[in-house]
Image (cartoon, rainbow, N blue to C red):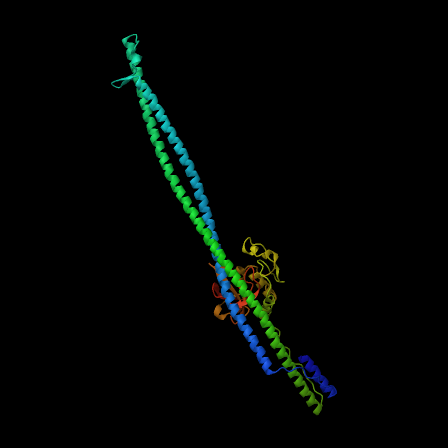
Length: 421
């Protein structure tokens, strides 16, 4: 517009009033402009309110993501413990069954031995420690033969009693083993029951956490949709007021040109009009910010983004895959920083933890637009964003979202900013 006015002035200076200024453009009233500004402010306030609600919802959602991961690990632990307890119970049952069979066999052997000894004693007589059958002594050919038969019967009876005693001891040992095996089985079954209860509790806790996360995701989606709607209304209101202000500016420029025409007509003389100096080129910080803001609305894609723009995401075997990041063209948090700073020739690695080691660390109280902010959990950096000033930042937040401007989140924020420019 300024160049048009300069050209008009040059024409007026050389041709006097030969060429008239065109008819006046529309001149909106100040009340129309003020009403448009109020509408834009209202829409901007609603966008800010929804943005703050969305930031809180997303912070809660991130907490729930971490809780679900913890519950999943607890469920995995419970599953492993249950499998171990089931294996131990199976072994204990097998041991108890084997011990019972051995005890039963030992009892049968004692019973059989006792029956054989009873049969032997039923046909024998006792004399001191000698056991023998009366019929065994009948028909002895001599006293020596009689004595030999008595000694033989005594030996047989003694060995039978010894064998019976050994079998009784063996039966006692097997009975003890069976008792211990039953006790071990009872303990194993108790541990198995406890493990099953723990697994059920872990599964229930995980299901509750997952439902809470799904509810939070739904609420976040609602807030994002509402904010997007108000952002569209804001853009429309800003365009409206911008159009009115542009009309007023064009009218004022026309009016100034008209007055200059009238002045030139009344006192024509050669004039030399210099074009106003152009605005200084944007600094490197502004280049970085503008490049980041130029990607607003681009989908989040884990592993996506390079110095030339958004790229296809990659698989992570988990959350990113569930959102289909590997099929999206977009940025993750560190990829957006790579693209932004590539505009001023700075090459960054595709990992927020490494990006935090670049440049100079400054306290958050001294941060300024163009600085990078980092978030960590348990000392491990996992997110990066670009500070814009006035408590705002631009970021690629997480799978399922898009590049956006949001208020700075103070929870988990590292106590420094990284300045590269």
